[in-house]
Length: 96
Image (cartoon, rainbow, N blue to C red; front, top):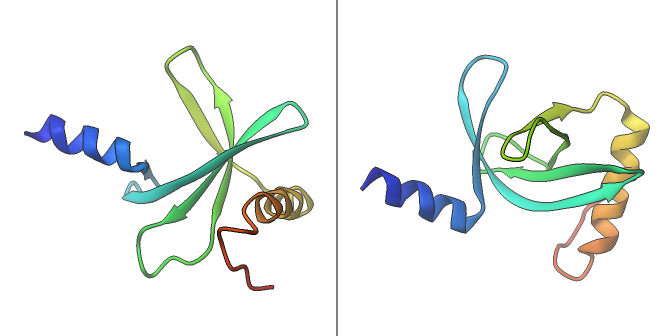
């Protein structure tokens, strides 16, 4: 039964990541966008207390494993979010 729950969450695009405090946080998968030879993961927190979109760099480890890295560069975040907004302008109503 537990296995079925995991499969159904993956099919729905739900990812669970562990934050810096060791707590599991669930996110809805939105998209992956390639920019300057790297891939970036776009997630939306499912927790009502969290707001906005999380953007993380995907770092492949091997064929089955990848790490997700926080992005510190504000200019890069702005560029990536601009690409996301342009790609999904017909699906989301973005506030500036």
